[in-house]
Image 1 (cartoon, each protein chain N blue to C red):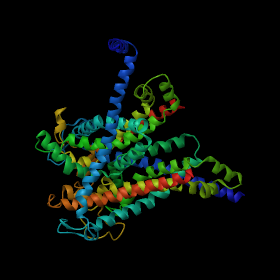
Image 2 (cartoon, rainbow over the protein chains, first blue to last red):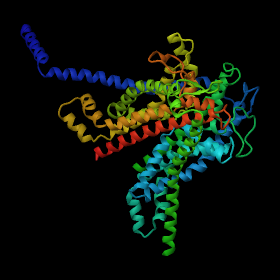
Image 3 (tube, rainbow over the protein chains, first blue to last red):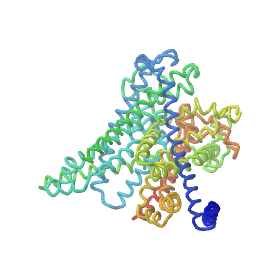
Image 4 (cartoon, helix red, strand yellow):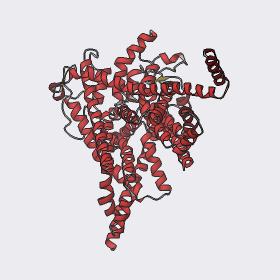
Length: 307
Length: 296
């Protein structure tokens, strides 16, 4: 009996080894291996995020205090706070959004609601995707040539705001377009069927329905403005300026450039490390906070749609 | 009625003019970059600029050779792409094909955060963490090397590669996928023999855009690559400091007198960068168009 069953098992094994079943076995092993590698890759990517965030938060939180957030830098930026840099970044956000938001939304409305399929539309679409892919330092050069030099704004808040607005116009157009595409055509058709004009339909039906998507895109581009360094470096950010900008033509400090200066060319780089971590953390909090708000808005409205 | 039509027409033309503004901006960028670049060629010939091996903008015998900067950009970008492309595509496959829906949903915010971290924060992290590690690991005089830049840049281009590849992978029709599974192929065989080939043009577009993102990055590289403008040797030059085109513009623009030859040389470098990214975007766009056509 025992012997017999052994033989049977061996026979079965040899059949498996010789026959087509063998391929199935190998395929399963390689699938396991491949899936393990793919999982590992995704976890590695997430791991980078965790490590970078954890490191900055761990080292930065002890540097942050009310004084750090509300005081001017002192002693050649080796002490004191980052107040002017925070204010500068807020001014940059307000200025560039004021210019980019109406422009971006209007362009997106045209492209999605009016434009036909013709050469002009193709040209506009091509321009947008190219602007979206143009490096920020090139925008910086352009801002320097056009706003600082040609228009004579000088190295100023105005020049930097306008330069940054050019950088985010494609982002706003793209996210607004996506939001508009998601509005069901029935909305438009039923409104038009009621005899309401096209513009009235867009203003009172389409745009309100697209607001969550537009807001999400806007918040994400605010994050982009807060973090960009190269364009403002070329068009108006000041190395050190212990006062707030008093007009749109004055220079300004901003968080990302301040971090760069402290970390690479400040006085006593190693001694000011805590200030650097603190600045990095404040910048990171602003950008990630904005991202979080965007995610929450999106989730909120997605759930609302489901109901 | 006439009044209302008139108003509608006016609004449409206003909206049209605003969208044409994007074309105008692109045109102005070309115009202003080219205008200031051309002034360089009064001093140096175009050929000398493009093939010059030395970037000595401030010495007595000043030379504006693009090669060290161009090769610096290329070596750092190549290094970044070599590890970011496999890692990014693998992550995208995991998220769209393998991960349980809950895990995939949990992973997406990580990628959004990675995309949101400002480049100067990446640079700072690289400077205080990665630079010492690279220095000790390879026993180098400085940890500010092309490799350090490549690693940071690779991490930074992951979100671009992952998001766009994932889009391409998830838009492969599920009928194809189910067909393959029904024929007895395993999930992995279906992924690498059916899904990935079907999404290949979308994935290639993702890679192109990742390269575009990497080659245009400024702040991070300025902080971690050491900024030495010499032609990098290959492959051991990966452990030497390099200087990219972007870093050169950002570093030197603050110190040059406006209107000098050096000033115009930096614009010429910017123009080269602009042309490179323009071409990369164009290729990515063409690939994407073909891909859409195929799916239809």
